[in-house]
Image: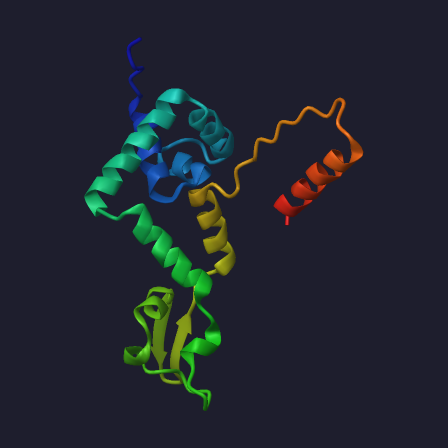
Length: 168
């Protein structure tokens, strides 16, 4: 079966979507109506030809940047492990940047120098955790098939305990 060729507008949507993964905004930037952009994005992203093109653009981006999955996970791990007190001296002053570890430096989102001093911002740990969960598949449903017929009560209790531990 021959691949369906995308229209120019669909290709533009794919290009825009691969920039920030925001379907609604990608649809608007690709020229779809702002009123229906959300619906258009959902419709477009449901199409196999669009999904294939977006996946192709991901592969191209990986090749261009040469950033590995391991590097991405390393930065996200730095964010998850960062603690605000680690950036301060015992006297409460901000540590000199040169005294930070490479892991601590990776976790900094931004540094702003102003008349009142230096401000720094750490990224959201929640967003980092969500991203790591997706990348490692921790958010995927687990398949747990069990035949419950003719099972004694102790075995059923063991299964319930296993399920309870998995959800914690």
